[in-house]
Image 1 (cartoon, rainbow, N blue to C red):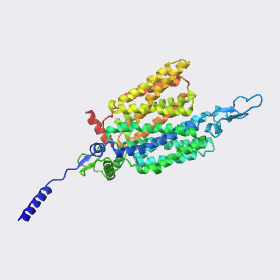
Image 2 (image 1 turned 120 degrees about the vertical axis):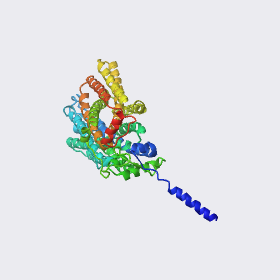
Image 3 (image 1 turned 45 degrees about the vertical axis):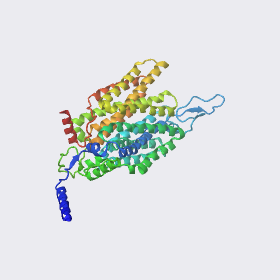
Length: 518
């Protein structure tokens, strides 16, 4: 009798349980899933962020190595008879003159790039940044397409390692210039691929501060390079030492870096995107319910798009087709170009101080870090637009004051130097802000293409900067001041992106911005 009652109770419970409906499927965008279930910035994102951003230090090596490899070393009289040495010659020292550090110390001393040949040093620098400009556009597009963020980063790092090592073997100036152009082509894709790959898996409330922190790795790379260059006596060895880390990065670090879940999603590889989101959640001590799945931001809440097996794709042409993104891109191109002219121009002005080159470069890198700290602290408090306006105005006004100081006495030069320090402080902060701002202004499907385009504008500014610096002592400050003020005006017309979604598709951006305005 008891067993019969027990069986009846069991059947009753099973009947009740079988009647409970399964929880409805919930389809979320990546930002929502990170915020609600996987974690916005946990242990997984921290590890992934640090490993990926190590590539920024490699970019610093390849960009700034020219400061030391192409430096003009001192010459001395080795003895010119009882009458002393004749006037110091141009080109390779002769008639009793010699290079203090030896002919192999730099490209300038080895190939005699002084006096009438001095323009060749600037030509190599311009060629490198021209390569960066082309590479940024090419790899910006490829990283949005079939190669992905990680695949593109792998290629540029391998390319940089190979071209850097070949550069150390250059036997003529023109071979050297050509290899520096190819190194620039790869370097142009390193920063943008690493930045997007590092920040896309981070939640919206933490993405701003994390994105601003990437520049610590770049400045840290410059500081390390200045110390390494001080210990290495020849330019050829310096290129070997600064190229090997790119190869080590590919072999040792990249295997532990994951592809972006957003790229998986826009390529319609939803299962791989979900697997990665589950991995992020587990590492962060969180859990994604079985009923939750991913969706693109242009999909219906309940039903996926009919073409769910087709990958979402886009190019810079799509950016110009949309009125919203077209205006944003034009403004960002102008702002990035102006910012780069001031940033690189003020950086190159340090050479005119005629003090210890290694110490100058080290202090210049370290002095940028407080700007990054302040910007990161204020970013999510005041927003991207007000902070961009403030930093551009600070730099523009300080450089204008430097131009207004017309005297040439020691006091005026000291005050002008202070104006330059304040100017580079503000522009370093803006340079830092521009990456995260650009990332948030454009959807995933064209994000790297847009970032590549504005990076090209930055490289064009870097090419123009040396031409401004040679204009004299005061005039460059007038140009830098005008660039800062015009840049602030352009920033005024950009929309605020703080606390707004990181859209995946062009349709999602258009719809989302329309709802936001309403």
